[in-house]
Image (cartoon, rainbow, N blue to C red; front, side, top):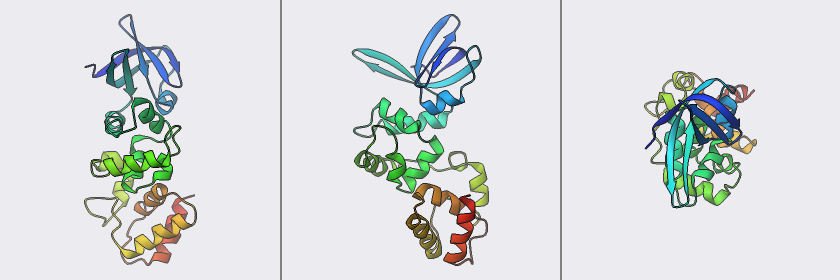
Length: 206
């Protein structure tokens, strides 16, 4: 229905913003992450929107990027996750981090969202893992550029040494998502043993 709204910010709250478009105030539901990135009242903003129509309500959900909108739309296809739950997830992680969490099956990271338990996080991973597209924009150009030799999918674990290093990082208490990001940020992984990869990854953590 409404692809986006662009206008002046009239009101803003952690979960809602009012955008004045030529004298008409559009009430738009947003995540707290989006709220923190918006400019102040009186400034202009553009939000890509998803329209939810129910018998008793008509809501707009707004996002600063198309990537955020697309992952939101995927989330609400999962049984048990409605628009409120999807916004809750995007309030604790951005679109790129959520894609990492899904691909690396990091249910703990997803379950940190208020109202999203471990079972719901598992269901989301199960249903979306094959649907989440990975490209340079989604994973961040810097990480993709540093992940030399990984191939078409920079998130892939391409050797036993990488798998051993990942398992060691998780055993040390790091989440799978942040551990995988650290591994993918290491240049020239080929030829390194698991100990060297682990040490290099730990440096990326700080």
